[in-house]
Image (cartoon, rainbow, N blue to C red; front, top):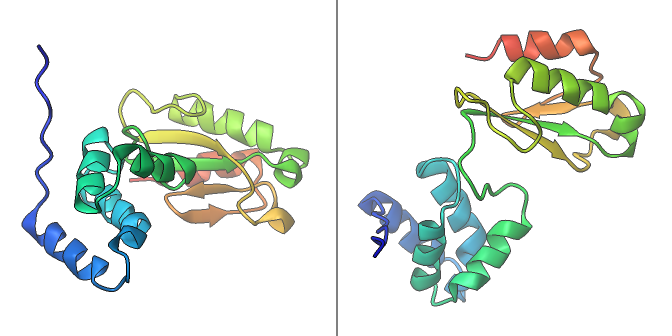
Length: 162
């Protein structure tokens, strides 16, 4: 028989979520900002326990929360590294060298696209258009865009990560 995990939500976060949901005519509308707060505060990803907690809090079915969390790429459905490197691979970036940039990112970090390095420092993602087509190829490191990349830029950018 397996033990069910129980999520302990810090009281300060519950108070924040109570305040957040008070601003919506239907508290279910607060799901996306709620998921953002959980991801920021509780480990950088949305665990099944978080989804179940949100579902109960918002009077939803867990599958509804899962549908939202799994649809949006900004929500991580499994643990991720301390730093997230997202390399755009849409047409503009691809035509200007995104494949080579992604390969170099994988070499430097020691992980493949969609994976996390063994030391837990990096998660590497291949992502769709990030809206930086005129400055292709690009990568996003922890929410900061780096554009017009050359292969050497990858070493410089990732080498400067604390």
